[in-house]
Picture 1 (cartoon, rainbow, N blue to C red):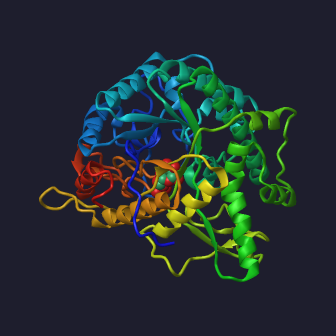
Picture 2: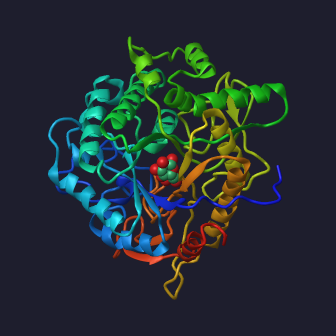
Length: 470
Ligand code: BGP
């Protein structure tokens, strides 16, 4: 639909940026922090660093926040490391961990930057993992206990809470992300049991948040991208519906309506992945209501009907590359879209489509908690960093977001990935996303100096004009 006049971004729109604890903080074993599944990962993909130092944000958060303030950030979406707060996953609370996030939150508030907190971003405490992780129902209780500590300590200053980052990607692409427990005997079936436990945990935490902090708002944060059929062949359209249900709606229908999506459930039945649902679980899901939907969007996906071959979902696919599932759908490279240097397609219009679809289905306000372009940025001889490709990516996506707002979608914030350079989930330090360059190499930490990129100055101007100057 074309519009003669575009609607402006709402006043008070949360322009900002995102990070996650393990990818940015470093200080992996300092001040009483316990190990997470990420820290205990046995192997990293060849040629990529671990997360021990990352961007050293733990020690340099003041400098980082002041740079975010210089850009004009209205919000900063970051995650809290469960293992800093409760090092063993349950039990003793670590005062030093509480203190670190108190400082960070206070620093943000000093500059009028709204803290938007992800409670759990891939880094499950290792102590819970050895007891079965999310396969063990007790992890639900551990997450509830942890959430209460967060609400009690930060609820006076944090209004916006995100429960679990990309639960759907942990279930579908845990191997690439490093969250998959490699000891699982029957991973596919087991993962949907874990998924069920996470859904129950999330519902309980949303409910507790509303009880303890009536002024606060809470929502899920999956990775959502609309799925296109490869052609108008009815078989391809069905495959796209299948994958939309399995990848997207399964998670949002459960979070918002407290029910399992029917197509996704029939997929679970067909594959023998039906989770054990205890008495009372569905009531817990139904009683909890999110206040908004946060989602991460990088690109659309395209699928065709499954041919029954080459559909091993644990082989090479990552969060944004579809392989397939025998008899259900098969990944298809969209010939209409360019790809980035890491093989991810780029689809700004798909962003508008996804926003419209999510809003039509759920009618809840939306905040974008990730969107961005990974690239091999380089420092020029004069010390500057030019990233015109990233600016172009943002321009096109923000333009589509404005069109979606004009279409009637209620969007209240945009926190792209990432505020500053950090370590990619599986492609190391060289895959950069930030507005601020962190001067380190894959294995040479150098001085970790902060260098604002060209996109930093562009974003600053864009925020200053509330999106008018794209
Ligand atoms: C999302 C994750 C982030 C982030 C981003 C970019 O799936 O929520 O943690 O890393 O993708 O992905 P990558 O680092 O693999 O390039």
